[in-house]
Image 1 (cartoon, rainbow, N blue to C red):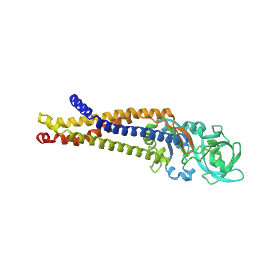
Image 2: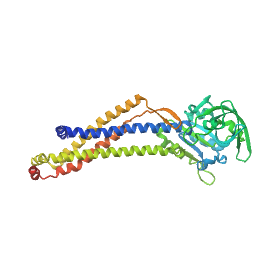
Image 3: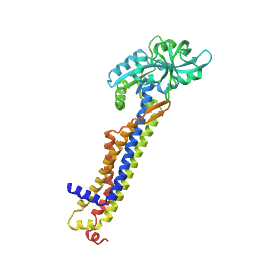
Image 4: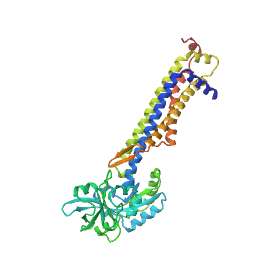
Length: 412
């Protein structure tokens, strides 16, 4: 094998220009894919983080059927005291969950005593909400970055439309599940920046105030937002928690609860899927570049070295030895392009990190792009390049190994 490698390297050196052009093409492809994966991955992670850490959470638990009718925010599908205990027990059995926030979600009327409009409200425990959605305080653009009893955080668009500001007194009127109407005065304690996507225009109040407005004698919860300690394990944690809660059945023997990841709750998951699809397409382009370039150079190598092939065949070199010689040449080209491409690609990503490129996402401005390339990406791309290089060399190598020595020696 070592002797074959020496012959392959010597042959590549003999045709410096061709080798340089082919290796350069492979290198450019590897660099392009690495940088694209790093940039698109960074944007995707930033987008997901803004959605999950601002208001949505990594996962949510609801009573079965709540998500299907979430547009109406049905109070009749809230979780009662016993259901909450069961969910808390399930959460405690999953150590990967580091925080959760219980929420009461309901619709109401927002009045500044002059005009009235509708509003969606979230009653939360402030400490729980800040832990489950750590970026939530950054959305409070005016006022103290917390939620206190008797105050309301008003979404920015609604505050502008209703001309309310910090310290103003407003009234929230809501209908409870029994059909009775109740109202309560609130002081505007903060203006909330609207996040991108559903839930971005919701107002927030303390959960005790929500219970008072809705005239609830005991705690009832619409949803529980969860945050896990390692987002990469989201699928495994979701499966584990779903398995535990699926054992809780109603009188008809059907599951009481449903668990959804952020992907099922946000339309921006489609954008994340598009980014993944684009990344896959770029990898296919890399395969095409390597396949065409390697196959082209190996076909030319076989054509130009027909007499040489005939000579070594006449000397008794076995066909499989000739086949291996050309395969090793393609293998060497693949390694050369992959190594140089990885070095240049990682260097460019490092420079991009130092440059601190910023971009805007929805109403979020000044987000810093932090492209990263992990070992798995480098290994995957390098493996693809090397395997495709060998496969591209297979047909020309097979042709060379099947040549008749006499015909090859007669070739001019």
